Image (tube, rainbow over all chains, first blue to last red; front, side, top):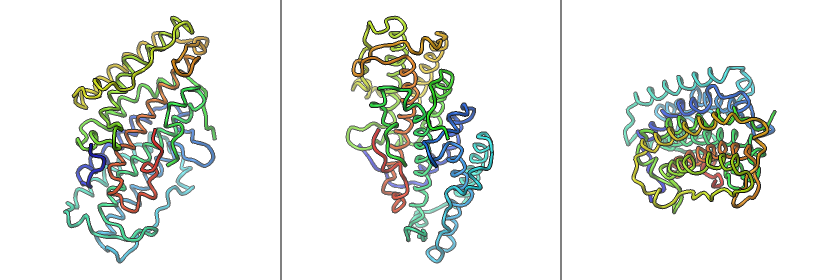
Length: 181
Length: 181
């Protein structure tokens, strides 16, 4: 079976465009205890994860696409602050955060489509502040995988609230013992 | 912050009732390559995961609830075959599988609500073929965590298709390196 695929802009957009509806189905109207609980200590709860995804839409993904297209390797990407404390404690409701994320993602995907990226664009290069040279296709693939990372995280955060409640079944339930990520 | 919650029937149903819509938002109409690819070898793709979830609705979760309520510790649960080869290769479309799962889950949640479980019911006991004595609340908590396990798995399977495409960003993307589960 195929276990890895080549990068494709339409396939990437197919996932990116679904993430707001996935998070909406999972989190909208869910009892407070599921969305406000975390994995202990300073780990993130669902509110933190939404704030972080919104920041990515506002300051990270498309901003970096634009830097690659305009400046290439002449301008290093701005560092991305994953979750400033001021944002983390903004007090928005989950419904507001889901609405904001859906709107921003929609706007960004329209902006991406408007670029009409060609194969030659996908190998254009930019400079990441930590990794050095990266390509546009790597940036877009990361945007999609990053969504999956946080969907993975939300499902793990929720599952771990029942770590004790499942009793002996915890031995079978991989999500309760998965490495952080 | 709270990091673990006590078992609650309404909170559990709140999640169980959402899973079909979550999977629908994620998988319906998604390009074939995302849903038919796995993590290598005999690991599961999205079709396998849906088949497995459907089997759970048909033969596992509510069947075990009924065994606990009718027989208690006098009858061991039937073993659950996670994914018989005959089922795995049934040839159904993803749309059909999503529809089947949503219908079966809906029927099971109606059956669960009809039981009007009381606190005294939740501590009633059954016998798992591998673990021995378990309680009804542990079974119901496991049903919910099991959903999260497979949501977690689907997001991981999809993300790993871009393991190479993300280039150096793989260092930041936990889902690409998470333990199996």
